[in-house]
Length: 110
Image 1: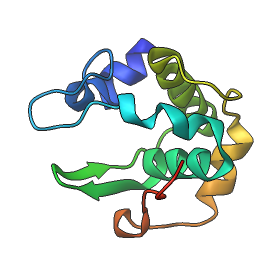
Image 2: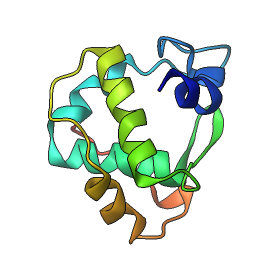
Image 3: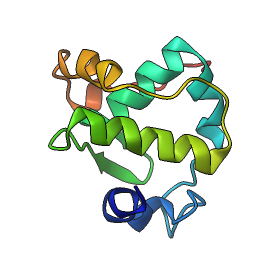
Image 4: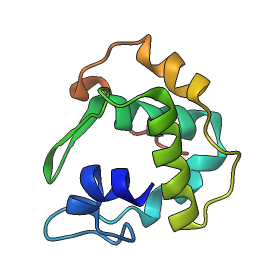
């Protein structure tokens, strides 16, 4: 999994999700792994990307559902976050929405 993380995420977010240059660390998203709203948000971010203060994060919808679930599970381990492992089915449900990065909004509470 480090291969996909390294190729798609670590370049901006760092090897251990600590953040690099102007791009944010991901420690603050740990609580999102434990709630339905938070999990949905994380799925949408990896599928469609999002606009943020540092610019546009691309989505990775070209990856398979299994790969994106594994990617999120790798991040969960890095952050030592609580919550069930992600499944390919969760990713599939997010794919059905066909969103743009502008439409991906972080919930106020995870």
